[in-house]
Image (cartoon, rainbow, N blue to C red; front, side, top):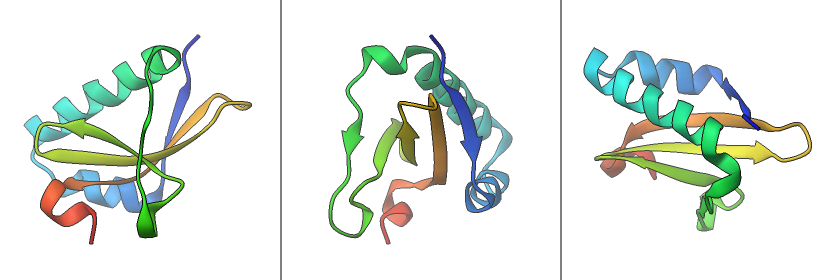
Length: 86
């Protein structure tokens, strides 16, 4: 069963700064995540991002959390890997 996806205001701003091609690649990967979430093992983050998970899309990262009860994935940040963890 598919999860729904919500983007925070910060994630929307992050997304708008990316090129159209990168936005499309990331959008496709987020859709894939929502459709296949029950078959994957989320990649947890640590330190100041403990409680969040990452989705790798080439050199870009999507930082998200999820609620299994509500079946919702919340996207918090989207950005290049050298900048996203600052």
